[in-house]
Length: 132
Image 1 (cartoon, rainbow, N blue to C red):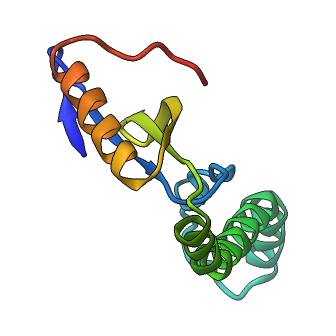
Image 2: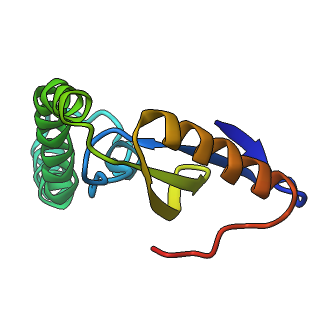
């Protein structure tokens, strides 16, 4: 649920679908833009240096892609397990996309009501304390 606090800041209050939070964030934004290079020896040296400098960013993108693939593989089983075994859902409040508060909220119905309660409190100006 997307709400705005009295100062106009956007908050998102939702369930966390998997038991963990993603650790790699902003991998694609970290990639620098590089102009096209020519085919002379100086361009080869510049390209080699650029490749060495970009290697950490390329590895970050690779790790983020592997994490996303793992998430897509595990997600159906995690959801099925939560539904079958009645696991407690964790709700979280995020400013933009950065989590700042979380709490265990019970089953599906209880977590839906908890999301509404937290969203209403944020709209009224009662911001949750930062727990992360």
